[in-house]
Image 1: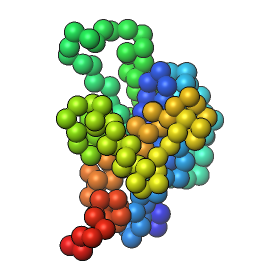
Image 2: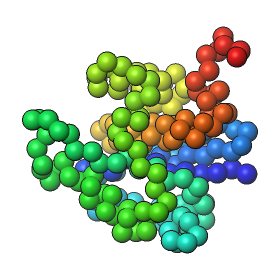
Image 3: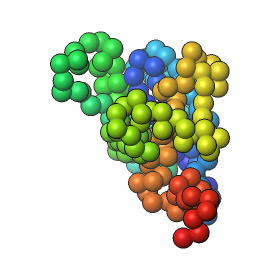
Length: 186
């Protein structure tokens, strides 16, 4: 039976990835979204996509597709001199509040921002480059045109968090499809 998940990257610009998998089939991106508006934009997205949460029964996308996993990037303040508490910098926290306020809290798997950089790299620039190359290699790379925005950075982040969640689940069809070298038969 096919299972569905929703990955969200909250912020000033929000990204979301609806994805699916089953016991024998790997991760599949079903839909990719990027939209502005910060916390209010996220609340509007929840309403426009008819995402319904019942605290005891679970969550549904479009009112009918059960969500077996909800993955959200967790806000993490940076402890360095370049990080200042501004309205923009705390908007992801406000997005978390929107999700919790809509009843998502018990169903969320929180992930640190670093989880999306599973391809490694020595600095953030290289990590982002490797992540995008990984998506291109597997035909999953989005552009601004794909999501109707000037760029697809937040949609890509949501997509990478979805894949990271599948890795964390040790979902073998996904691991084989996306991470086994073509020449590696082991």
